Length: 98
Image (tube, rainbow, N blue to C red; front, side):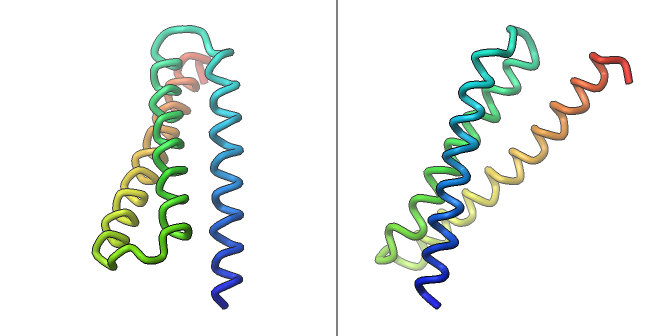
């Protein structure tokens, strides 16, 4: 079971770093303004999530309270990320005129 959990975490780490790479390449293509500013925040949140994802499976000897704190920070960053993505889509829809 521990091996399965580790494989799931390693898969999540791979996916989040792939998202980080895609966000970086997309950041270079977005013109300045509010959309670019919002996208940069999303880029930083992806980075924070990636660091958190690395922390949990690769540091199993952390005290339980430290792990709980890290999981809380990861969850908060994920929730902020979701809200920012939704707000970004609303801004794009408004700019497009839908």
